[in-house]
Length: 277
Image (cartoon, rainbow, N blue to C red; front, side, top):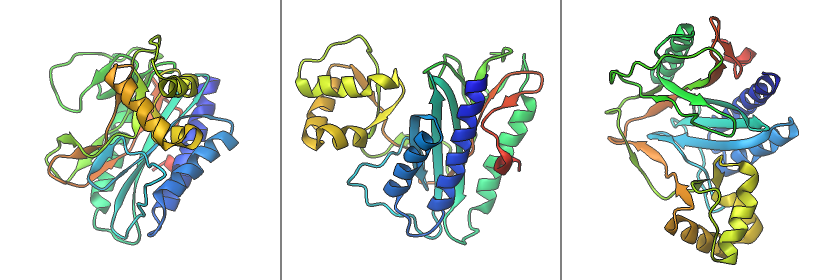
């Protein structure tokens, strides 16, 4: 539990530092996510993932070194920070409005309130929407959708879970949008044919199945080697690609997320003072 608490404090602190910077119009998304990764290490954590999602995008955006995106007045930006200590994961996210616009204030507040209400329901035996976490596992085996599909799964005491309500002005469905820059190893014991692919597997091995992103590779083995290696690993099914997911009708999306341990009074280990709405 101590590793979860420490990872949670780091993840939440970095989330708030990153969101504050992203909310300033004209901010470089690449520079701020690089800053967040650096801060995780400075604070004693290990990077699980540092991702963002802009406007209609809900998840899985991660900049490459070619990404020139900057935040603009009126944008709605999500930041999703994952930190671990020896595989014990803290997963949290929040949404910020860029600049002084209040256009999507109610949307953002609705997601925040939904998370707050859901946490109040967490206890052993409850039926809730979210996903479990495991050691080095983003999704620990139990995932319950955010609608009533008749699933009767009950929370068990001491489960680690993450709750992440998404709220949108659109239809509530997602589609893939653009190319993937987030990947995960799907076959950890598989071998690779080319040196490029072997280099990638060697570099991402410390992630132990957690996500990795393109720019971690291009900064060490170069762009050409990265593209060739990824192509082989995708073709052979050694890794899986996770492209950005966007709201299907172009609606704005807001998200808040906390991680917790299921108890009669849950231990919300990613909640720090700034999160006490």
